[in-house]
Image (cartoon, rainbow, N blue to C red):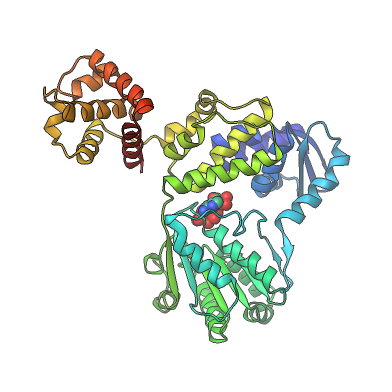
Length: 450
Ligand SMILES: Nc1ncnc2c1ncn2[C@@H]1O[C@H](COP(=O)(O)OP(=O)(O)OP(=O)(O)O)[C@@H](O)[C@H]1O
């Protein structure tokens, strides 16, 4: 393989992981060598190298192999290390960190980061967390299966793997198997091809705990569904714990046979809701603390985390991607990261996440909060009980929408832009001097952004 072949592979990687991830993580890498199935890449820092190994190893190897080079292993470490010296430690580290051999003789791909310790609990996931904890104790099976569902990137895989880690730690004799529904299907198809279905059945029906991630994948795949159903029944009938996850509830997975849907519903079905502001902030804080523990010079300007938690609401995965990008930046520039730099580094993500909040919505929520009528926002009344909330709404409109001072003025009953400017300054001043105003502003902002 040559540098040109690496450039070719990069095109495919970019398509798969998206432009943002590509620019942050792949673009800074350079080709070092390709020897005996090991692709060696140089990264500008250890942090970037490690993150690439953890998150993009498979996609890199797949694209390099698709272009004719058979790449089985990846080494990605900081440029200052010699390729041959760094090869061994990086590979050892990866296999130590993210994979392990289970007692069932299967190679489980459990991510070391996905433990209960690293899982932040909030209102939106507390029930799922409690159920997962209960299952992980390995006591008498009280609900079977445990079915976790929720939209992408909200922690289903994390919780499933946390159960698997905990069970293996607490009960080393139990045979715990975690895999995705897709892997289940590939193994089944492979067993069919190799005429080894008896081995397949034996392997899956003798585990003590089976965790199958993303089960919606097998919808519509008839023979895999059939096999899954038999495996599932055999385990449940023996009183063995089964844990399933999907991006929807069992009833919402179309193309799933009725009898499977009803069995999936027969245990405990728990929903992971989108993360609220506090949970998003908690996850960010946790990530920052872990990063800072290894990078004592790392500093973030006050308010950056709160800003990210309020602006990036899509999923915890997107939030995590954003903060990791900040770390990569901090690691390169070796200085504390300011709010301005954050907006610069994460500009594309922030633009995508921008909610189209309207001034009308801001007026409405402000009126509800202060028990006023919408007409008070545009009226000429100047009494403080009306004027202050109106100023608050103007302040929020300036802060949370891209509207200019004159545009905001027009919406508030045709007022001059200097009136809006005055209102914004006034509220900013009061927020320092008056706790009640500061509290109102925060509460309203949260309400509008949730
Ligand atoms: N409550 C949480 N605390 C800490 N990290 C979390 C939490 N929820 C999610 N994450 C992190 O967000 C990322 C995405 O989570 P995960 O892969 O578990 O999502 P998922 O729901 O399985 O998504 P998908 O449906 O796409 O597979 C992971 O890195 C995970 O560690």
